[in-house]
Every structure is written in structure tokens, then in C-alpha cells.
Length: 266
Image 1: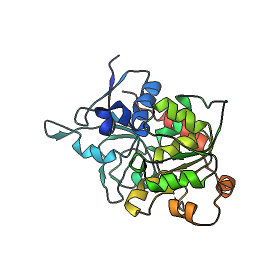
Image 2: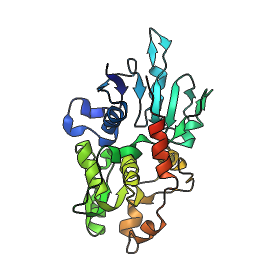
Image 3: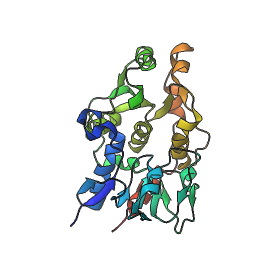
């Protein structure tokens, strides 16, 4: 059986294994599990499929000999509120309702959800030692003063490095009692293991926030707002308890099974 040519964002990880963002590299592991086939990286002009990540904007470059090609799209998201996408592709799933609304001329109705919600199919939730509060900075937030201040301000917190191997990151997130993350896939993986979590931002930015709000729209949660780092370490004593009490992800199990059922066969 021939391998699946999958595109994902490799970033600096293409030349440095210590710079492989787990959320992007999770894509290949999930596709391999649910296809039962080997998965190989392919540039977008040679790819058959895209899955995890805010990479739907790459569909514009899916061409052969200058002519548009069709991709199999499974759970991919948009990273820009102004984007418009072609409906020519095979849309099996997209990350959220906001992204779905950006696709013109959809011929079929894709399911909604991010494949990162299927992380428990990669590794089971461990039963061992717990991390009280997992602090997951986006890779661009590593070594910032704000993250250092949060680590000092939040008792029993520990940083989870998104550049660690995929299965290690999944295991660490699944071991948390609570997750605070500026990495979108830190939040998605936490949800997949039913770990209460909160969206963190270092500073408000509507353009950056679109992909988070797109993800939350898949649960019908349209009022989600992040907590800022400054609110945590500059205000009154901050606690995870109110966020844990308010935590809910309606329809999660149905979404997980919908994603599995929608996995492309080609």
C-alpha cells in the first residue's frame, strides 16, 4: 500500500529535530493511525492531504502544471479571519464553524472538529504522577519574561515544552490537573483528555485570536475570551478553581467519533 503524501507545517523542525512543534507533527501520527498506512511529508504542490494545523491557506498552492489540484482536507483550520477558500477540495472535516464559513461553493458538508481531539488514540491517559498546573507556552513565547513571571506566580506549575517529542507532550498534558496554554494545540489536547484548561495570551491580538475562536466555535462556544498573563501575575491572587468549575466541552465524544467516521478513504 503506497504511503500518504501529507503536508504539515515543519517550520524550523525541517532541519532541527529540537524545533519540531508537537501540534504540527501530531498530524502525521494521527493520519498514520487512522489510515493504517505510512505517512510521508510532501510539499503542498505534491501533497494528497492536509490535516492538523492552521494550514488551510496553503490550498491555494495546490496545483499541478499550473492547474488547481484537489486535496483531501481533514480537520484543517484557518489562521486568518479574512481568508476565503475554494470549495473544489474534498472537505471531510474542518476545525471550526468560522473556518467552514470561509469556504466558497462547498459541495458536501464536512464535519467540524480538530483531529488533535483524537490524541487518546495516540497514547492513553497515564495513571501515574500528576502535574498540578501545566503551563504550555506557544513556541514563540518560550523564554519570555511573562512566562517566567507566570511560573513564579502559579503554585505547583510546570512548563510543558512544545518542542518535546509528540508522545511525551501528550503524556505530560494528559497528566495535568489543569492546563494554561497559549498554544492552541495545548488546549485541544487537554480537551481530548478531559483536562480542564484555560486559554492564555500574553497580549490581546484579534488576528492571532481568530484560530482559537474558530476552534471553540466547533463546540458552539462563541463567547470564549483568553486570560492575559498580566491579569494573572499583576492582579489579586489568581486561582484555577473558577476555571475548573466552569469547564465544559459539549458534544466532545460525538465530535471525536465524527472525525473518525469522516477520515478520508483514498
